[in-house]
Length: 501
Image (cartoon, rainbow, N blue to C red; front, side, top):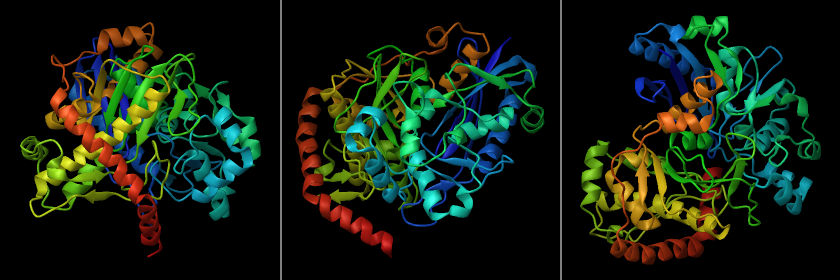
């Protein structure tokens, strides 16, 4: 029997999944953790904690599987995107990784724009230049921690650190590399023009592979730490959006998904790289050459609900769903802007804060909780709206992430988007996508498409939008957008003032 392993490195937890060739989940193990925020707007994590979580969950998953480790034929990875992991010449971690939700590099963002010019940013970078991406984070280290920058020999993405520890070799993949701002998305290689413009050496960036390409085998040290066999093939993997797409079966041109994880995304598959002149969406390389994804991304999706729930005596999520289901659409007139740590699509502004509007004496915790769910869905709907103006549309979408495990939140999304939603029958879409990629690299599947056809299945229901609720939400959605426009300058000023204290 052949088994396949997928390792999903998230912002708040790491999960290891083992499937059989038919996609049946045979083992699952997870470890939660919390990134550090030593100053306002900072988000960083010691990569060695990720590796510890990886070793522990792999061991647990293997024990649960109860089969010889040699029967795990391949292992691959999904990872939180954009973050900067820096190693020295001895492959030692120099400093904590700077994560995707970090907002410290505003000055470096402006330096990149000035160095390239906005027209070249549109043509070459094809993405908003934003804090938390690897390139501005690396430049921040150069400008503010020169003693650390001088040590940098290797710079790559979070999940690539796990792959390095697993194989002993430094590498990345096209999809994750394309989300660094240092990559030529059309030519599918590190960009000499970009790096020369900002005076960053190209040789610190690793060789890249396709998502389903084998990069080596489990090395002796990793086998001892994880319990895996040295015969197990290690496969490149990719950024979480690409891997979730595989795990959701959205691998054909025109397929689309909505994800509510820690952050949130709506993602569309395309056969051409789509340039947004407003630079308010992201276009990244997909799981193979000739495939790209265009997505709108929001900073605080599931994180918004987690934050709000933490302010009170923490409620069980089943209890939360029961309470929310009893509240009518519109949450009694309460609107929530989910900009707790800035926002990407469509505002591209790290200097925003969240906001409740319309709170009154009849407002209780259930109303505010539903407002948080609706606010996140409104933010994703705005992403869909922006993508629609680029010619990207979907007759249905696959919902994933924690938001897909909440019945009320699924219905809220369908009603706001006015799009039917389907849900994959596994909750670990990124892990499943990684395991499918592992299967291709290990020769179990011919290609990603075959892996999806064999391993991806959907729950036996579709969540349909209600026209009457959608009409109500259209009114609230306009108020949601008006609230931002009326409050934009104040929100930015308050955010900056708060960081100075």
